[in-house]
Image (cartoon, rainbow, N blue to C red; front, side, top):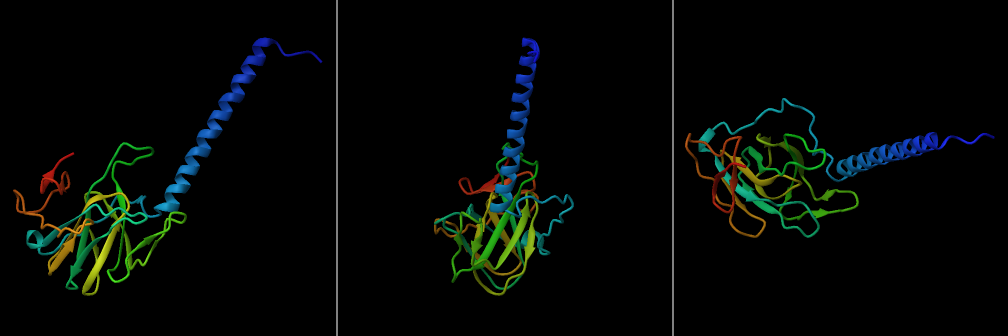
Length: 207
């Protein structure tokens, strides 16, 4: 059998390497997406028209900074107590620039009764003792309804979590500190969509 010319051998060699590299990239992306969906199944929200549900009492609403109670094994949760009025949740701070990152972050928020603290299963990504699990889009509020009581809260990726209500509301940050009330600023409201409340300076900041 006639041997292939050296030039054609080299072309075939590099073509096989290129195909192999492309295959590995595809497998890597598929594996990453599988991991993300398994461990944070409601992080990705494909809808662009998610409504911004804000308290009807506007700037008169009580707004508490619950800090950044990230989900994890032995991670402390934040706590809040409500009188049964509607609760409005937002996450003010998202890290951007990661692999396959989107312009707008979506955090998963888990809430449960304070009497049964959360536990996290690293293998399945599931949070036990959850009463409510909702996605919260960056720059917007999510309304939830809970009976009167005390609850724990965990977040997946969104930091500087804020809960607001027109009713009576109190809270506690992950470290045990009393959750501070976010002051009204400038226009009479809380931090706008272009800023977020920082626990360190106790004021609105812009990235």
